[in-house]
Length: 341
Length: 272
Image 1 (cartoon, one colour):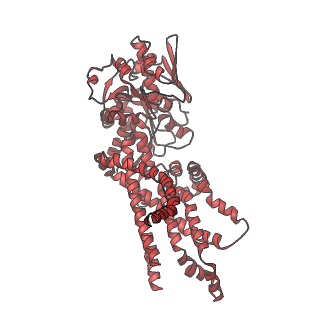
Image 2: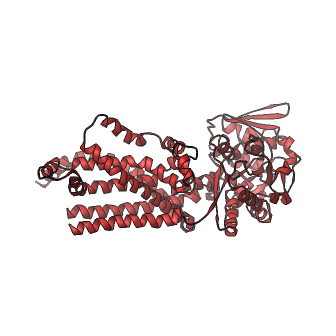
Image 3: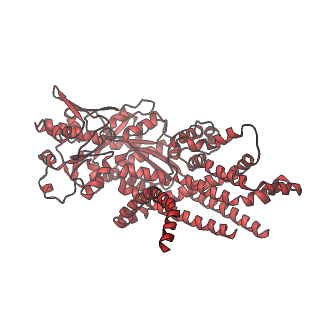
């Protein structure tokens, strides 16, 4: 009788102790910690994790919570699901600009990215591949892209190949590399091209399609895939070799936007026009921690952020371009100039 | 003579052998899936595995997963035992409806469960709004994780506790009554001790169910990250190579915990 009572006391005691110890560790009501929520594009994960690390070192009472998603999803989480982050950073600044004004007053363009062709440097062919002959080499080797219906990197790869047709006066690049191996179709009218991507792409052995561009990385590393179209940042962060393409086709130069716009991709879920890959960041109007958010954005666009972004393969825009400049928080103004695009 | 024996042996067992072969397909399904990851991560890519799991953040997410599921289980235990007892012992109008309500969280998709939880516990929600005034926030908070886990895993505990109470021989209860025992004595001295094993297994299953939950949690509390959310996040942003070691680590820990619990309960079974 007494024995069983002791056992009950021991059992409930150990449950209670576990609850309390865990509570101190995870719930911690004693520590006043501010939380800063950041919604960001998936391709910013690695640089933002580094920035988070340094920021939290400098501000120990702040807990930064990074939430990565596709850029379009980041925005719809705010406008549709009414989740409120303190900072929003996306891979396409126009997404911010197009948000209703109740959510944002300004955007800051702070980094760029570009499409590259990633590979592992161990075949003889890699020595001779360059930005002028890559499409000829791909014709014999095969390559990988991510699914254009799911991943912006995928439809951007198609845009790159179509732009190559225009730039190199070879009207068969996309035809040979993609159209004849999948159900993707293309139509050129008045010098503008429209690419249609049906839901079932039905690729053959020549072209490898995966849901996300990072999925291709493992295949390239293992040698089962010779080349894959990737963002430069992804290739750098995963230690792959890559060739840079001509800036007329690699979607890196905002000055070429008129040329990029000649190609658009029609997907089931929407239409995407070719345009330069420029990252935008903003502090939503309804953010909880306004001052802290401004401090974080400063970290992204100051020298520290610039350095982290450049070693992550996302060249920073320096000084950052903001619009309208007058709405910027005071501490960000020195790092930005008015965006006139 | 010997031949006949073997023949007879085979004849008597052929049915079981066939069933075992058919059944092993299912078993292989699990084993191959786990073994594949095991080999890829531990044998061929051990450096990467070591690097990923030595990250303190990974350990923290796993501990948080265990803790919040434990917390939810304790709540289910405290509130669930009275409910299970009433359902097991008394007949009343609408009992079958209540039993279906209890099982509802098991039937609905987890994303739907998450949506239900989110809409009542969010800052403008029915429960979330008044509690926010008291300083308890559920969105992106451990409380959010706990309520989501409680919602999806309590039916498992309740069902097993109900079965446990039902399995106690009703004669014992009647004898106790006839000897003048009060209701609370019957509960604490007879029912609870006799069904403690099912209650314990129910709690473990409830806890395990909580660890595996993903869909309901991600809607209300992306942060602080529990292991399933973390695996998903890593997979989305950095691919298989970054997420598989965490997944495998979780599998290994869970496997050993359940092995341990199995032996603990086996011991108490033998003692009986």
